Length: 69
Image (cartoon, rainbow, N blue to C red):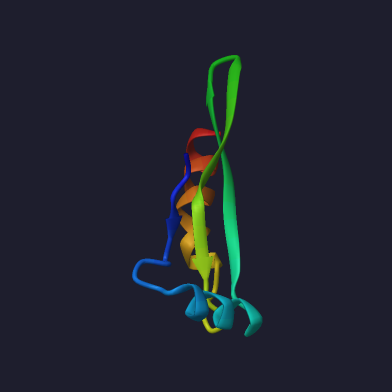
């Protein structure tokens, strides 16, 4: 089961407020290739607040796919 990163300690009301303000849940896809086999995987779920960018959180998955995909 995937965990949600970034919601630790938040109440349901705080979470709803953030979502109404433009926050979102994001999952990053990456792939790893081994000779003739390719594996597509998904990251854990990230909670991204409206004032944060998702690019910095997804950079590691882009680099992983670039190097191993």
